[in-house]
Length: 301
Image (cartoon, rainbow, N blue to C red; front, side):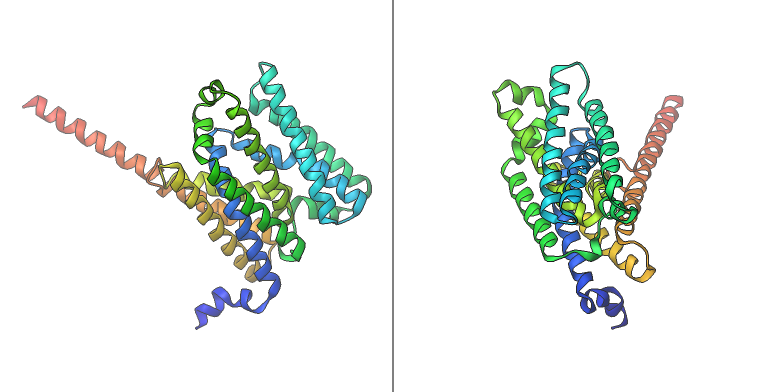
């Protein structure tokens, strides 16, 4: 009974903890699978770039309408899509690689967003935008996150096979017509939508953590894309619960607590994961040495 109170008491007793858990779980279920595809495309930093890209639009929405969820969401979606299209166009029309193009646009967006918030907002406003207010989610923010996550998961289910193919061999899909460009733009749209919805929960800086850390950790435990997607969502949900619990009992900010919990799972995965983990690599190296030793002994005989 004591253990049940310890693990579930805060969520049973306080409605803000239940809202925080519901919003975090909804975000984790969509962000993890998107992170797996970013890892598959070897574009892990694109999520970080896009998270910063929405900052100017969020800042404009905040400056014009205050802490209006609608205004900040529309602003974030517009700037995120504009940056995605411009960075993609630069990558396709010039010799510059896509990751370098996104990095350049994200740095400009970050500087512009911080400057806009600083013009009229206070430090607390900037912290709200950058780090989110997971413990202060209202009905509108919760509805936005759950709707965005549902649309993302449904869309990923519909385009799963062509999206995997586009990640593994984009030139082949593009050679078959316009399907490759459509799948790529749809994926960017889902990415921007999830990041915009997620900034209310974890902020524009922290939302990338719940997207990439579970995805990179899942890579060490599962070989197929489908299993990695399921595992990334599950890890995201687990670290959200652990982070909120740690925040409640440790009296620390919730968003960093969730990301630190995700980081701990990632580091454990590096050591103990059966698909490329350090322990697995050590066992394989030891097995190779033993085989070479036996071959050497047989040669002496």
